Image (cartoon, rainbow, N blue to C red):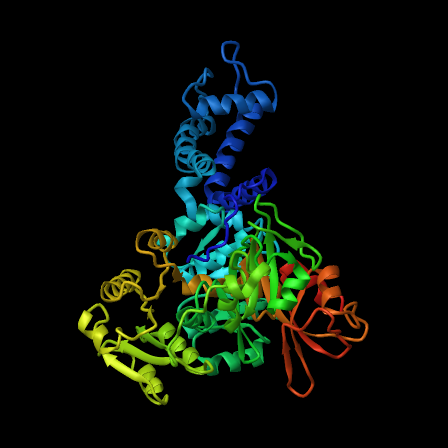
Length: 600
């Protein structure tokens, strides 16, 4: 299942922005061509002064009257079209000879070239991007246009925020994709101060370093901070130790691992069904899923009653006619409505049963029996790279954990192999997961799911098809980057649990760049929502309010309340009250979170 947000139309540059960009571009061209243009101006000036003041006029060839006529005759002289008689004195002869020669040379080499470049932006595409970037204020600078970087840019655009990209490889496959969204791309090394200045780092709201290299991203962030101390910098890193140390210096929730952000969703999809995304919270996993309300099901009724009975939160509600319903506990869910729900992972499958047709009228008789499961589910994880390793660890932390079998190649990364070998009860099979014999050795006959998590879309698809050849009914979880591939897999081979690591992670990086100190983020109903942990001061408007009142008044979901002794209430009831000094985890749109935190 592809989790790409609904993209807005490609941005059209406003007339005012185009005007400012062209003025800036005009200035750049003047600076580049000033010497030749100055030479042309000097030649024209000397010739005009000579014709206006010193030219020995005759009745047949009178001296030009005034500067304007003298300038006109100078221009005619430049093109060898002057009707003036050739002067006999040395100064006049030199001017009449050199003006056409020097003037034409300067016109051809500078003036005409200047005009051509000014009008033809395509011939100097990179310079025009710098001119466009000069018009941006309060944007996000994204460094690195790889799989994560391009997703961050697209999700910022989908959420209504502007970005400027810095990319060293102008030939990257994603450059044209980003340019099509109207996003400027600055060609250069983001470690260079001048390149960052061209991207507008002194005017931006934040910088995201999304290159696939921890040290490079650190160098970029430090360089940006040197140009603008205190700038919000968001880093993509893999090392957990590096993550913790960086956040001590750069601030909380400033360094993120794409694989760590995506791993809970991959792991949950392997043991549950129809999961959009997963949020780790206080040792538990909260899953997001979408349902269409069935007639007379237990999910039909007032939102508050459904949430309390089913231990869920309704994040988005859309009527069967496609109209979005405002977030309110008193709104009603009806048959055919499309809802996005948040609940603890074990409750997700129960929600499907609660949504059975007629379950509200006679639940014991109409509810479908829960499908039988093994006492200990068995998950085969194919691929032990950054993502595969994180998913194995996440599966191992589940309570109770499934039986985990890892299929890896013989030349895998030794640091990951050594780490998983230290996990109790782990089984490892060395070989190509596309080989049926390897899958049989991994126990596919009794497995409850297969997760293909290599960095190669085609390889993952081949693993999934090989597993389906042996077990047509086995659930498959695929890691893929291509949205088009993910959408087609659902129709062609029935593989619906397809996720992109970069897409799952990019929302959090984008939200962190916009408002800072974000833990997780994802799109719901075309809006970017994020979770933040927030200490409620005495004077804050939500102090003393109930969970329901905070939701109705502010549009924010309180998904956890953190006690002073470390106790946590996940998805607290609607009548639970917030007192001053409490810490709560809020889930809301970015504008709402900014407003709530700004009221402190």
